[in-house]
Image (cartoon, rainbow over all chains, first blue to last red; front, side, top):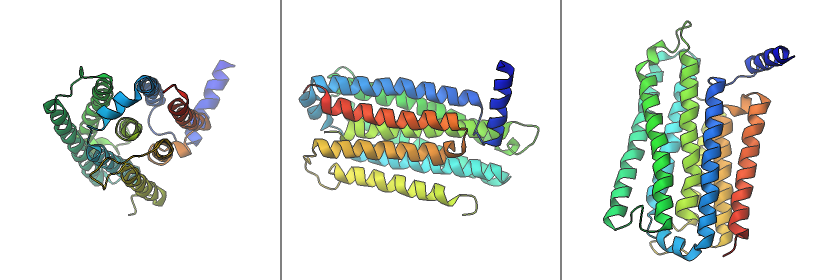
Length: 199
Length: 93
């Protein structure tokens, strides 16, 4: 029975198109659960000291948050274009689009470093208050995910010529890496209103 | 444009538009502090989770994925959005 179920599921996976390996989806869903918990913890602690959180939040520059959102969304579009290029065997384009996405990721990183240094120069650190503790921890964990994503994109960029080789599972790798990158993007999309915008 | 599907481009344009709208609603244009209210904040959360869903369906390809995966993501988007807005309104101030 188990065998039959597995085969059935496998054939369903084949008729429906699934990007990447099943494992990457487990990882993405698991990671999203962890972030979900962090989002809830943030709103809970915020409710204990709404005014304190609002005062500290007013020190943030929402332009940084908005610009970084636009940058990540654009990088995600480039990653989609890289995957689509691989699907139509345009090996020449894969590397170009991945490079564009890597440049966007670097721009996000640079802006984040600028923002952090600005905050630290103003005297806001991890230990200042609860809001800044959450700000640094949440954006820090997200930044760590972004750095891993950048390494994945660089790896995919370096092996982009092999992607369309039939003996290689490059397309699966590319799709899996792409989905991870999109997850980094969508987590930031929730963090942006949570940390910068909510009143 | 042959590389990109039409709906992916539309999704990206919507994502950019909603981001700019969120920024504007939060006083992005004015230099002074804008007194946004709880209603605006709820709208910003709805925008955010609508954006998250666009990414999941169109960028991650979950729209064409096996039903079980699509359901998991759709439920996550709905439940997370509802929980965050409910906590925001209902927790003691």
